[in-house]
Structures are given as C-alpha cells and as structure tokens.
Length: 256
Image (tube, rainbow, N blue to C red):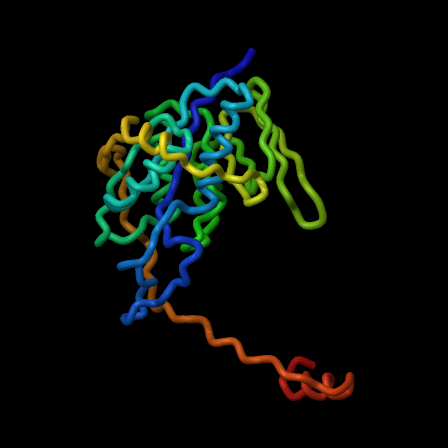
C-alpha cells in the first residue's frame, strides 16, 4: 500500500554562489548589504527532488517549503513555489538578531514537522554560507527518525525509501521506512529554472507568516563569532630547472 508523502523542504536565503564574499570593516561577519542573494544551491536540489517524486508518480500529498529569516527570505520561498512547492511558511527572524544556529533551526523544524504532520524532510546537506552540515542530523536526532545524508539518488516505494550516497571509494545504499530525513548532495539532480508562468502562479500560492513564538522555539544563539578575516593571499608559483632544484626548494620551504 502506498503512503502519501507530506514533504517539508527547508530553504535558506544566502549570498549568491557567484559572488565573492567580503569581510565587513569591523571583521565581525561577511558583508551582506547591497550583495546579491539567492536560494542555497543545495536547497534547490531538495525542491527539485520533491517535485520530481511527484512527476515520477510517487504519491505526494503536499510539498511545503519553509524559511526562517528576514522579510527578504520570502523571495526564496516564492522561487521554491515557482519550482513546484505547493505552499510555504516564512518564520520571520529580524535581521538584527543574526542568523539562527543549526540547533535552533533543527528545533524549529521539529516543531513544524509535528504541527504540519510531515513524514519526510528533504533539505540541503549544508548551506554555502556557514557550511555547518549539521541541521539534518540534529533534526533526525530530535525526532528520532531515520536519516540518509548526502543523497545522490532517492527512490520511494510504498513506505520504503532507498537512498544512494557517495562515499570514499564508491557508493553506499541505505534503506529506511518512513518517516525519514534526507539531505541532498550535488549529484542528486539538475534543478529546473522557474518559468515566468510558474513565477506568476507562485504569487497566488499560500505563504503563511509565522514567528518563533508561534512554534515555542527559542532562537537565541549560543555561539559568539570573535573575528572574521580574509584567507591569506596565495603566493605565486615558481619554476625550477630539474628534480634536484625542486627538492632543494621544498627543503627551503620546510615541506621536506
């Protein structure tokens, strides 16, 4: 008997991957003012895979996108709905309060999963701004659900979910019963572009505005960033005449 999927897809608004980040003058964070933002690339994969499941005739009852952040986070939710999500929830977090940490996000998602009666969560394995790669695993722990991370292929048959993931030296195949947490990796799919007609349709889809208090979640951060600096500039390469010259140069640099 097939089990209808009620999918939750968290998405995050991040600095666009094509933009070179700059550290602010106070060296407390990356400069975000006046910088192009877009949906986290790994989250695009999650939306795309959810929509493809429906296109493969997997019974998908509902695809719900969610984002926590300032008002501009609604932009990525509209994009998610233009790509195929059915509706969205925006949990507004004032910009002056900073970004939520992975544990806070996981607690929020747990509350949403329970309130919205989800049986699958598909999220990016990490966001390209903090590269934490923690939220999915923390959420699985809080819910006590099965998890399959860094998915490169997902198959659903009834209440069985089979996930292929790349590991050092090969691939690993995992199988779990619903409910399940899946985190996505780059080889999973190629996200579609949101077409103009779908962008227009997305404007009519439901976008709820919520707060952390609505879910009984404390978004206070527990970590403090002491300093952010640019990585040291890479030195230019040099030429050597022969192997002996190479060995001598490596010894000078302390590499041998």
